[in-house]
Image (cartoon, rainbow, N blue to C red; front, side, top):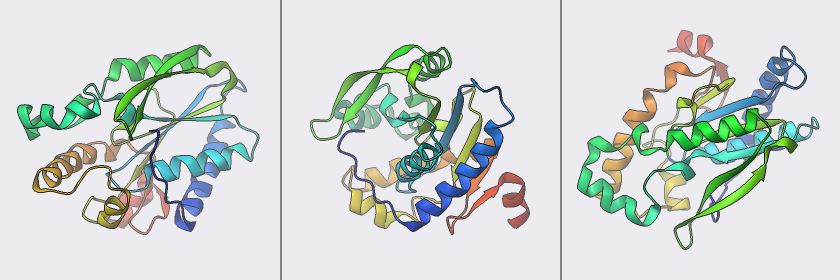
Length: 222
């Protein structure tokens, strides 16, 4: 999103390096021209955008051309209308169904086919959706980040950040995308419930201490 605030620190860099090594190893098992996709999901304030950006930088150091796509740009309801829509429809409508999965699938397909693609991009200052054109023929690897990003099909490496909105309050306050209120807290709770349904599909988990473990290791530690 344009105007988003990134708060990158050492824990993001260390986690990104660990994920980078896993991705590099996995890519070596693929065809040289294989179009690789990484997905990163987690709750509000968990560091998805920071991790995606830092991972992209790590991969770039290996001479891999990376594009980061924020799936939160793919909401079906535009930012200025979303709060009213949620109030009218109720909390039960909050979740994966708010994403425009048709557009997300098209973006992934255009990447796989090395096509030009028109992608939505939310500008947080005027709260409007712009349309950007990107040439995927010049990109080797795609990173999708967002609340429900790993819910997309055809992802090669799924990463789940295991921090709840209760544990990330300070980051939410600093970034302040939306003012805190009882209604906002209700949204976060329902997003929490929706995001948690995706955890079991992850290949890698960033645990509560921001260490990267495989799902098998994560389940052993529970």
